Length: 107
Image (cartoon, rainbow, N blue to C red):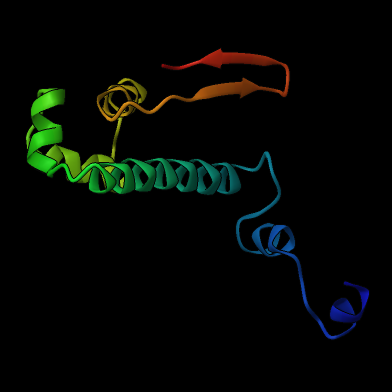
């Protein structure tokens, strides 16, 4: 790693620090949140496809239109409850770990 740094290479964390600021700063926190929501949406999309389920079929299970499922999968303006319901509909489970101590099962 030191040889790479000698040639100007930076870690991904350093790159994020440069681009979005350090952790705790507003722009960086927004970036981290948006990235997490996008990744969760991608997880839901991949699992839906793996189960050979259409957006309309998942939407029916959730009580929403397929356009809303598309928004979920893109991570656009989605509530945590809608994410959790989508995960349940796809038989996925998850947990939230708060500060490395408190674990909360979500499904």
